[in-house]
Image (cartoon, rainbow, N blue to C red; front, side):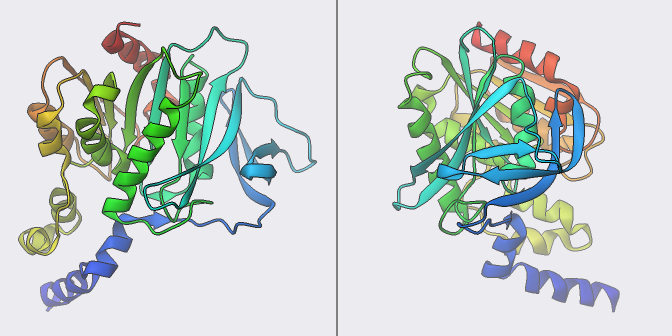
Length: 303
């Protein structure tokens, strides 16, 4: 009886509409919103219940509850660019303050939940290490228009790459795609489709395919999950056609995406490639391993 109930639940969850929602847990922000509340990490210190004030072009300013602006070692420039459907997408271009001009630009593809407010902390950690980082919200996330679907987020990432390549401060820098979780799965296909335009690929905690993660999530009926889940693209196959440096970062303590999925992607990748086994929860690399990740990215790009 328990198995039957589980099977019925899975069938409901894996209908074309419901299952898509399970992959994209977007948090939309109303276009007219002026303030939002969140935790902010600045220089390694987490400040609770801070306020984000949104100005023109959704420009964020972080303050404490007394409206004091929080100082940081980086700047954030909020930008709006369009995807292939003419929808507006919102992104943040993050640079370190008082540092030499960055020679590496990271296009950060974030995970399936939240929005820029919940994902930018990792980007700021990397910006403090001397990278310039562009992180954006997929269709339907944050202030970005449209709806999150597997093809939409793929085209969104292509549009983000086109956008950063149009910037003067990105020209003459190495461009590395850095994908986390769902963004890590996505990053392999984006890198394959734009190989001539990028210099490397980092996948942190990305699942190997939609079928693999569905089977992992619903282990009692894994075979049924594999049958019901449709694939538009899969990381371990896409990476077979990418021939530039790859860094795979996976945690042995990841309760969401197991390390074997990273090992599967890594086996299918071409050399030069590196596998970095870490600890701590899902996609916590920049928080706990920023120095070593920085070193590995610089090594893979020759910078």
